[in-house]
Length: 384
Image (cartoon, rainbow, N blue to C red):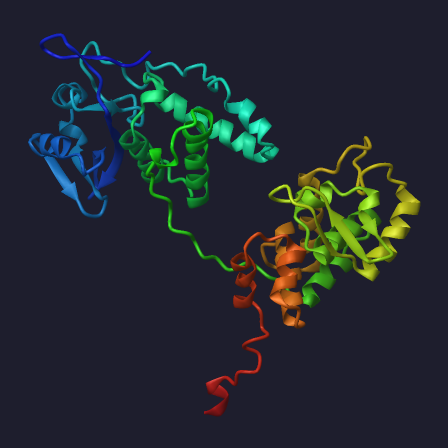
């Protein structure tokens, strides 16, 4: 049911915008931050007329000292212009009778709209994407529990995302996923125009991948005594695999005649071939004789698929045992593989194909961590 607000003339008014209230600290004092779309001039003008309201350049918002803030007064002053979201305020905020506090609010039993999960399945989204979209859209529904989702405005959604960024401190990648989860409902399930949402995307972070030297890779592999575990780490590095791709490998995907590994349904549901190392093949043959896998190349104790967590634990132990004091993940091995290919002169186009990158720009990042372009440059200190 939508939240309907009664005005003095008892007409039902449905606000189209949202003001998010948050508790924070500023100049040693506890404040209540007022977050809303500054383009909404009626709201801005009304906020400015409130007593004890201030602007903070540092926080980027209007605020009221908590000691002088009364939710009931704020509610009365702005409820005809906006939906007041005070869920982030702590329960000790004093309110007058008739206004529900955060403490009193019950968590709703959140159910995804009809067609949301079904369409994710029909479009064959990955399990991880389905789980993320479902969780984030449930959060969205919970936030607008008193609203009709089909009538939530762009301004309200933008205010919600802004609240997540500034209050919950979500990462840029999570911001993107949450936006995608929301857009999926309005654009795919409801089949609305793509322009329906004009949410600002986060600026893309440009982080260089963590890369190990060949010597460090050898130390890690050599420190693993268990044959199966060693083969797992060798395969990830020597074929440049993602963890999920390794887990999904079957015995028939190893082409020892052509020295290739077939990846079926990799990221983006695309098949591709990658390299098979001769050293890895030797260990795989020993492993096959000893463990006799039936379907999956690497199987768990119950002959099921190997778990991603187990792979991470194998690598963690090996890194610790090898004495490498760096943060190393299975994806670090993939980054290292790509960088080493580049350093030995492999064309970027082939590396892109081997890794299964959709865009060459993704592959180009390895040029920034490769020693190939800078190793021949003479350091000026050595000339002094």
